[in-house]
Image 1: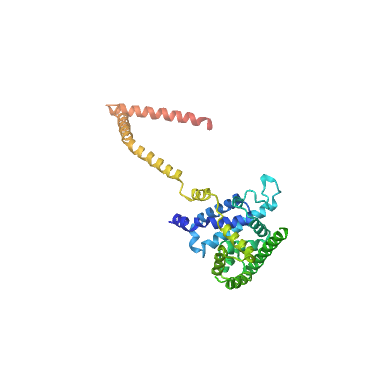
Image 2: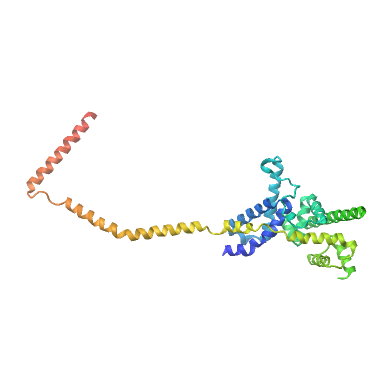
Length: 172
Length: 144
């Protein structure tokens, strides 16, 4: 019975969980590891599913926390040890497999440089279409904080892309 | 959607006042071909988010998760082996029963009478007990 629930309700979340992990970790392999880890942990706690308000919010929060843990460990680890990942590199990033438009590269670079909460809010709202309430629940912040972070992030991206476009026009 | 309406929605979008549905309308508008050039940067932003939404993990991820979650087939194999052993033992049971009968026969043979005269039998028992008691006394002697 619970295997069915797992396959129908939890497993299909893997794509958005992966995208969230990828946004934070910037590495496809690590992002997959986190999703796998979180899903298996969720399975071992299947007796508790009924007590959770929203399985989706629970999963998203678990992935976010797991990613932040990894990022902290990466900072502690000296660069170069067991091929430590260069956080600023998109070399092995699945994004690269897509046709990389220059404007897209610019937007992504701008997103990468945003503070953590702004990145997360943008990812959940613009990419996944979450409501403000859902975002507040996943991130454990107030509605006002969600809006402030979204306001700053949207306007930072707008500013960055307008600057890029105008500098191209000047160069032409 | 009218250009004026889009301009208003955009204004509210930057102020974080739009609903998810209104943002979907904006995305839909920017997917179209009739976008003025001054809004070209915005079209790029909305189309970037749509592309981000298409990002998927590798094909093997789902299989790896299910592999960890599914009941182990190896365990099921172990149950079959255990069942096979029990069936085998049940099958061999008549053989054990035969040898048990033989053992009972042997034991019966041991307790068959060896003496016809009760006097002789008593003497033999007394002699055996005397030997045993003498040996016990000999064994206890060094302890005194």
